[in-house]
Length: 305
Image 1 (tube, rainbow, N blue to C red):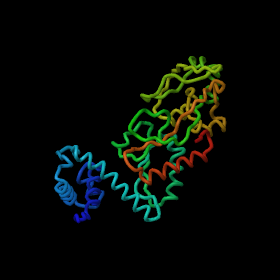
Image 2: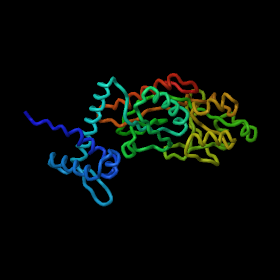
Image 3: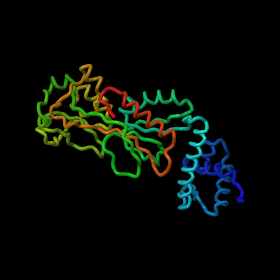
């Protein structure tokens, strides 16, 4: 009968942490070990496997081809072990969950949802980052990203959480100063707030008599996130096209006015959870996705599932 190697999971965890932290010293600090202890564990692992997993230089640490394969397998096995521990402990969600979301949706929807999620899962730590840039989930060690709009083709797994209507709107002060557009073509004579994302289009969609059309828009202000666009619209700088969830309260309070609704083509913005595939989905990720689906299902203000 082959000898049982009791140290395997420990070696895997140390190896995975070295890769995650990008070095032996950082991994040692996170594991409360000495750098020499981490180095010895990795050396023992490589000796047992009979191959080099890591290449160290003065500036960087990189994985060999064998290291890449072993890391992929180790992450899957460690996650399965973690899920097994959680199942045996009554299914408690624990560990660290790294979440990324856009600034407006993150601050208005995700952050309040996380507060409730943490109450239900007190053994979990959530690391939340808000940005309107598209993050590299692997490069930035992010478990799950909440993304708005059409997703590009990638090797990531996407789960639809819900959707939000988009509306064209402006502040009463702007309309008093510049007039109210009656048709999409009238937007040519208005300041339209746009985004500077590489994926942003300089046209807005409309529908007339059942036919879809694109209206080119320009303006004196280009921004990089939805909250800045909302603030600029409220300040009367120009006309904005944003998710209804983001401005529902402003519209209800009269701070913003919906425009050209007769020409709205049923403009919807998809809300998706994106995560890395290639193995069993961690329990903490599955639990958070289901929580966000439930949150959007119960949410007013232009959100739907």
